[in-house]
Amino acid sequence: MEDMSQYPTELSGPDVPMVRFMNVTKRYGALTVLDSLHLDVSEGEMVTVIGPSGSGKTTVLRMLMTLETINGGVIYLDGKPLTHMEKNGVLVPADAKYLRRARSSIGMCFQHFNLFPHMTALQNCMEGPVQVLGLPKAEARERSEELLSMVGMTDKKDQHPSRLSGGQQQRVAIARALAMRPKVMLFDEVTSALDPEVIGEVTGVIRKLVAEHNLTMLMVTHQMGFARDISDRVCFFFDGKIEEQGAPESLFGNPQCERTQQFLSAVKAAD
Amino acid sequence: MFDWRWDFAFEILPRLLQATLNTLAAAGIGYGIAVVLGLVFALAQRTPSRFVTLVVRECVEFIRSTPLVLQIFFVFFVAPQFGIRLSPWVAGMIAIGLHYSAYLSEVYRGGIEAVPKGQWEACTALNLSTTKTYFRVIIPQALPPSLAGMGNYLVGIFKDTPMLSVIGVAELMQAANAIGGANYRYLEPYTMVGIIFLAISLPAAGLIKVFEAWVHKKLGMN
Image (cartoon, rainbow over all chains, first blue to last red; front, side, top):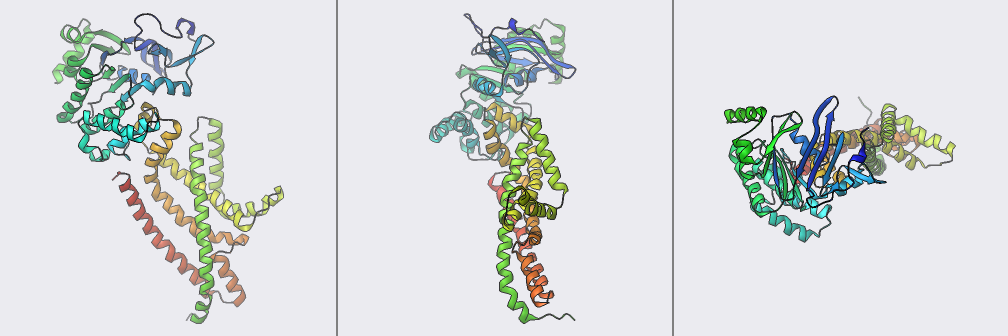
């Protein structure tokens, strides 16, 4: 058993990060997907995670969204434990009720959009605000319409997802996540399932978010050019560990580790 | 040739039609019980408690593996020994409703399992409660693929209502038996019962198909 007394029940001090992974380990059976991960994301920061498939990068986002449990360590959100809760001065694994409250300031967009197929674009966006936040319908509608216009989907707001292209569905999914007013947004390979010609629609929306909002964002992507343009920091994952991280100019322009160099040149060769 | 008597057929027709209403009521009430209870059984098998899951799972298996007519007898004749006295109608509705709820719970279970994992994850990401996840997202999507199976069992329960005659529920079969016994003529009543069943089952199956298409369209899932 891990000694939980090494983890503070709350982070304090002048620079408490928005997200902190402290010693986080994730295993599937005998396979260790993430090994003692340390990662801080500051408020308003855009951090991109890159790396070969199977390196654990998507798992990072899924753990933060509480879609996966963790096998070791603690994740903190805004200074408070997310995966654990305090009991008699020590951290114990969070129960379902605690998790629900703790994750309320996180939003996530998925590779396959995961829009609700039986609802229109607008209804998809209103669902969370009405059913979770308890907003009056009129207010939720106004908020959703504003966001749908921000992602350029106003004219399709009454369409069901089956009538929308992948790029359009992903833009609705972004609006749906933003309608919950999250502090942290997670983008999990949001362009990987898209046709090349519509990738720009989605990256354009994310660019706009970075430029105009002070959201904390964590993104997993294979679009290296895009990652280089908009990230504050890029983390290269290899074999369940952060092999190298830094500002995009230095990581892409002058990678230090051999594995980073190999990965980047392989990606460049494929482009 | 058959010794078919039209005058006798017309004479017993009103009584058979009257009994048809009872048959329809029995099928409707029984199905109503099965639709709701089946959902309860399906959801109960998905609770985090493994004990509840196991108990419900075994009950469903037990009900599906024993004959309906035995269950009808059991509820009607054995319940009084535990101090519960039930009228034929109440006992019949409990037995047939329970029996079909076991089948419907399997239909729902299949429908729920067919909903992609990503839908559950989207619900978590939007922080929907478990109840709202089920009733607003999962069940509406589990329903359309379940409709065909639900329709089959609606016709099935209708055709099984004659079994209620064994405990004296005044439905179509019981009326035909009574008419036959009183007049020593069985050809007309039984033939007419068959025609009445056919006349209801066939259009019902067609209507269910139309309803299915309508629901798919309504939910934008075509």
